[in-house]
Image (cartoon, rainbow, N blue to C red; front, side, top):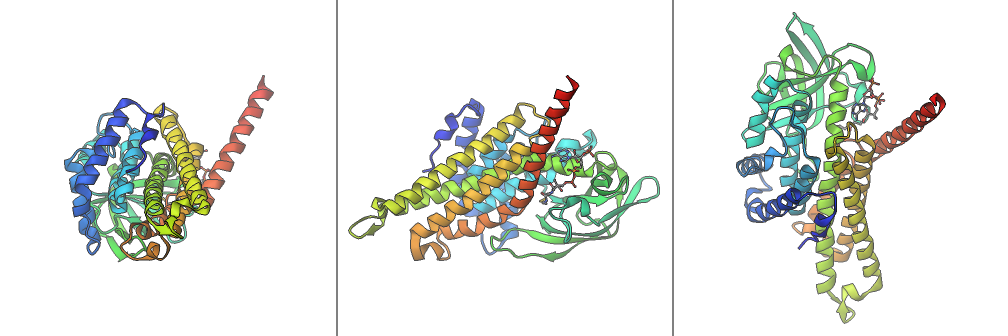
Length: 395
Ligand code: COS
């Protein structure tokens, strides 16, 4: 049983505490039978449908006019679902990330048309930002959006590492629309599956399987009313979305780490070695102490970031990057230690810690690799110091 004492922290309101308990019970009762490791697409579709039917996706795609995400709720959902099953976390997270640009910058018409399906689990969205040569360096993207008459654009190029690629009903595609060089010349467009000129070119297999694909656009004609935000706003829309979802990636890592700690602790208490439980050995104790401390430190950074955003902060770029970087790196170490406690059994297929070992790896890469988070954090520090100097000079 996971330690739930963090729910007493002052970052949370009673509604969050109730949400966390209810979704944990729901996951216990419902997620297992929905996962078929031989049919990942069907598993994701079933999980999305079940999450939607039970109302959990309202947090991923808030519908009210002007309403935005409650980041603590997103983090609690991801942490809890990841604790149970990586694929359930993935399905929930992608409903949020894929629809995030519409929630944050969509017109009332776009919100009314696209969000209800996401919230009730009958539509699956995707977030198509990365390209083969533009992952960390978003502004280097080469996919273009060129005007076609006054009211359409044509998309040309390819996107890769796109989660939900192949099963999504619609995609938010970022492309170079040319208002300015670099980051200021990108726009975001809603592209529905089946639009002529758009195809899923290749499905990609990874160590913790989930729907993932390369997409191609060949003269794909999209109405300008499908643009999310203004022309040239695409980079900011993407970054504002990532400001919210990076903390939640940290939360997913936290869920994996908590599970690894619980699995490791149970194993250390039950496994007899040299005539006593493994947990009696001081080296095991040192490992468990480091694991538990890392878990709590990660949780503090995640819920600090989420709470700050929920208090109305316009930007939580630094806090979210710290939370994502620390929680994913820490979870990798915690899970590795749990595998070590299990010994040979820890690398056996079908054993939970082996699954966690595969699940955690991609989180240190996607939505901004650890190295990019360091760049972002340092830039925010320098910016803040420069602003403080300028304010002092103006006094
Ligand atoms: N929220 C809102 N606006 C933001 C922002 C944020 N978090 N971050 C940057 N912006 C704005 C900047 O303020 C700037 O606006 P102005 O033109 O008004 O000054 C504009 O966006 C350009 O920002 P910047 O100059 O920092 O752009 P760079 O190309 O230098 O950004 C990094 C470089 C590395 C920070 C960026 O490309 C990044 O975060 N990369 C990682 C992307 C990622 O996570 N990829 C994984 C794929 S997503 S699954």
